[in-house]
Image (cartoon, rainbow, N blue to C red; front, side, top):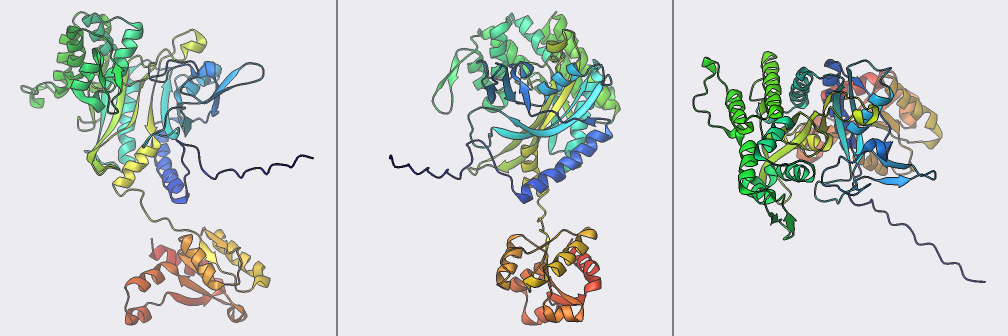
Length: 502
């Protein structure tokens, strides 16, 4: 009889491009999302939670830099032949919902959603295959008021979570203006248009010289690999570069007291670039309307500004596009100082629902990169509050477990997070080590003597740690880290101690 081969143990490692989130990270994210949800709710948006899995047909092929069917997503084929995939963003599932339930939903339909998305792409530093997004969309409104509202809500959200005015800017552009510039430059549609779109979306990363090369014959990237360009001529490249730099117009002669603003200068430059293009003129008019609506609400150009370098890479945008950028500097993993960069974006996508219905359904929306925003907040000292664990009820006598569970229940009923130590209670020192690892603020102690007298010992673990590090013997005696209270006062005494530590 053949000897059975012993099965090798699986390796305890997570797949590349994915992350594990532990207690403090999850808590900080939940705290931030509650603030964001309150802003969205205040603006009249309702929550929606769609399935993480969609049919591949419903998702479409809108990921940037992806030409192969099923590429860029985690997809599989069912036995009956249907292809399914994990959602790569929150917008494509919304388009499916808007089409499927169009007779039941209010029109316009305003929704927000929060959750993970998955992209099957090469992972790298700060680039993950699973990440959180937080979206808000309005489906069924053709008015530029819907786009202006998205920009305003994005500014409100950033300030609400702790990014002050001056540390962010919401930049607004319009795909129709770009189409007008392409028309004026004699640049055709199809693959050429898509290639130009991909290259100019890299303007913030590679700068003017890099985009010039990418619009022309191509360039070497940082790894030494050659990237093919879009193949435009010099005059065509000049048109596109002029568009990207139109928002850097000369501000001489702009005087708000005379009714002229920076926005007026940018729109004037764009009118010159598009020539007689009808679609370009329509895009400029939309930008002008958005600017007027935002100004009427009191948003200044230090919050929201027209910026022609914003194009957004996704192919489904049909009009206004917007992007929120954080303007402060951080130190990256290599020790270099750089701006934090983009943390949110969106735009108008009037054709996406039509894929299902055959009829145009106007829509606009935005998406916040939750992990990037949380990292930005933590780099500014926000949401970095030390997370305290639960109050630990220690076990001095395993035969009195019911008494200890009753103490924990008393604390919980008072709204205090608490747990009973469930490990081996033989070593009291190990129980305190456990409490330290759990970052517990308080330990509750009751031996047989305390039980007889109807009291408990409350050990202030935060104060105890501070005393151990800094205090003299005299100070230690003046503020003992452990005191005795009646069992009937347990919840009140613990609450007072927690309040004292904030």
